[in-house]
Amino acid sequence: MSEVTTAIQPITLTEGAIRQLNHIRESQQVPSDYGLRVGVTAGGCSGFSYQLGFDKQKDNDEVHDINGVRVFMQRAHALYLLGMEIDWVDGLNNRGFTFSNPNAKETCGCGTSFSA
Image 1 (cartoon, helix red, strand yellow):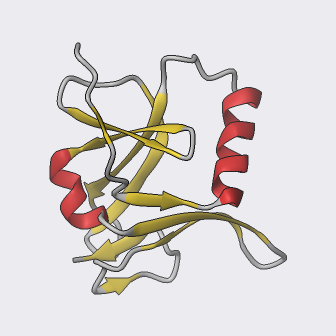
Image 2 (cartoon, rainbow, N blue to C red; image 1 turned 135 degrees about the vertical axis):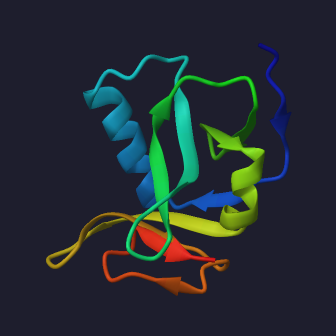
Image 3 (spheres, rainbow, N blue to C red; image 1 turned 180 degrees about the vertical axis):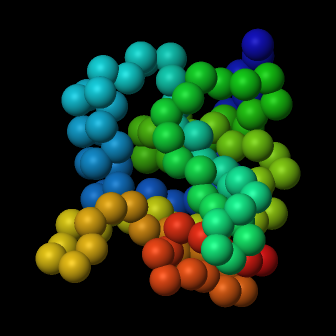
């Protein structure tokens, strides 16, 4: 499978998100050939849910290097994710990855589901 890495960064990963992703990669012993898969799936209380996790590269993935993190994304998902920021929040009331998506018309209370 040929790897094409694009210079355009469709999403942003904050420093906090990168730290947490590196921690997960190390603590879960994620294989070095895995990258971060960012995408959307149908479902969730608002229509689409975010997909975030380590995965092997697939034939139709676009590959992006975002601040040292290799990110895999399906081209069709870019329509929904372009310009999105992924952050890690570690507070009293909320702990986890957050998604700030300029393409979302509505989001649900949990923050992991949206409509476009």
